[in-house]
Image (tube, rainbow, N blue to C red):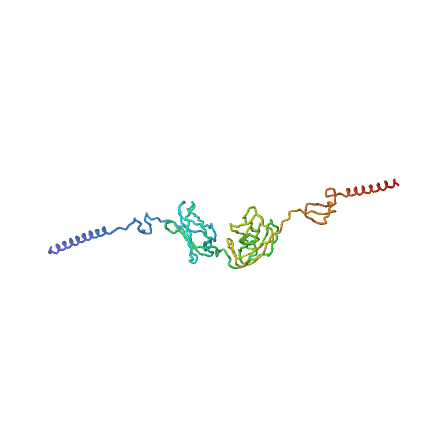
Amino acid sequence: MSRRPARETIAFAVALAALATLGGVAAASVASAAPAASTAGGGGATDGVAPANVDASAPNGSVDYDGERLVVQPATGQSITGTTTLSEGTQVTVRVRSSDSANPFLRSSVATVDGDGTFDVTMNFDEVERGTEFEVSVHYNGTRLATAPGVVGGCDPSCDDGSGSARFAEQLYTATAGETVSIPVTLSDRETATVVFGSDATNVVIPVTVEDGNGDGRVVLQFETAVDAPNEHGMSAKADADEVTVPQDVERPESLAPGNYDLEIYESADYERTDYEGERPADVGAVVLNEPTDDPATTRATDDANGTTTVGTIYGTGTSAVGDSSNGVSLVTVGALGLGGLLAVIGVVALVGSFD
């Protein structure tokens, strides 16, 4: 057998091994030259894990309101509250911007976060037209934490039935000044209504929203015509389940003067509203307060169980009665006086006869 082919085979194998070795070195060089993925300097997350220098719990917040939007009144001192995840003492900026180009306005106020994460600011909307819509936004270090829609005045859609009727049970209510007047209100297919007591003519205007809490279709509004301090509204509901709501800025004297006071009822739950000029009420009525009478009643009488029979009632401090010794002049006293008079006449006659 020839050895030349074996020698050529060995040389070929050595050449292949050399080529494989050179290929591995080249691959290793390429791999070492490729850039590695960054995990610092604010780079993106790998496999859903945030880099160590990025805050995974960014601050956020919310604005408090009931129903579909925040409702403030066209008045001063309107409160806007909310909650954030920021630490106590952190300051946030609350902005209110009109979303109605016809009535543009912008309000801004800084609030300090409390220990429970809440904040509270007070703003004035007394110069903003009722019905103007706006957006509330809460900001911290250039970041918007929360937003909420809102409107100036009016009732949130969720608080008004939008149907049904409200009426007074009667049109005239009479009481003595200083007493409590009961004003029954009938609610049909609705739970709320607003009663307005008084008018500009009487210098007393008190709007009060009544709510049927027990579902009987009736709220008895009780109104104190005399209160302990000025500007106390004196309104309450007779039934514990029913509710009444009155604005905080009611102005009224401690005691209402005798006279006539208008009553109007509106199918609305906007208890903060005080101006109903030009709007037609659902029903009207009146409260008549009479002059109080302080004098006690006295009687003229004889012949009851105590020797007295009433024959009339008079008012004043004088008394006139015939009865026993505890009720006036006794019959014994009257008889003694009559007998004395008779004896006096007999004595005069006897004296004249002796002169004859």
